[in-house]
Length: 258
Image 1 (cartoon, rainbow, N blue to C red):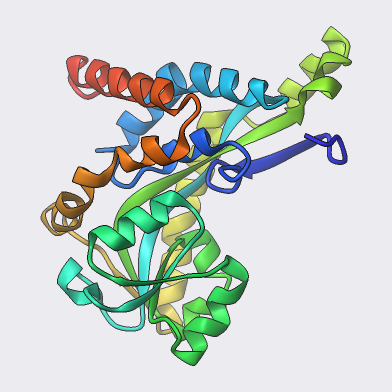
Image 2: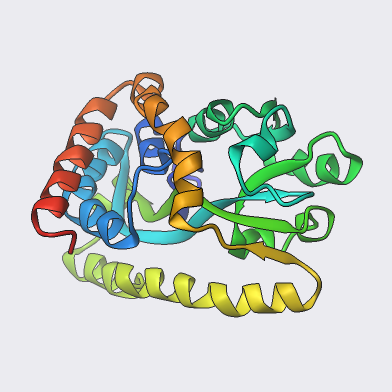
């Protein structure tokens, strides 16, 4: 916005303090499948997101990928009952607050920079992180149980300052757009990187707890009634984006879930 950086790749959770509406894309248990998420994001959410970003002086060039957030614990946390009353790290994003409050955890709000010493000292005993990031941090040693709750997804975006973008020639805009990896490729690369990393993590003594759909539904049913809190807290054009997401989900179902 200030023009100090001209271009960046930033997750929609990361940019939510500046563009609160973007945080809706991390609404807990928003998606029933990867296919639904991709279809709705690309065809219904993206046009609205571009308009919202542009109102903040930012051009959204392309959607990128971070991956799913799962639950990390010092013990196997296979059901909401396992985390009820547990001291957990709540991040600054509304989605984190909604998730942990909904499942009855004892939330301790803190920035990411304080999480890893907090896990090591016992100030908190659980958190939620995407696996590709989690496995590179001290949490993989102090909190070795990774539970695939898949409660929220992290999309990201390649963005550029609008003033800079408007000053580029048509040829230079094409160069930038061509240089950015396409969205299907980014999704595929993140997805394909996870299984080998999980296998390596288990070989080193870590634990991967793959939840069944029925187990995951136990978490989701507690969270779903609180989803629209995301819309209320974001304000601005959040309702427009939320409505677009719901239209997209209905269209996806009408297509037979494909």
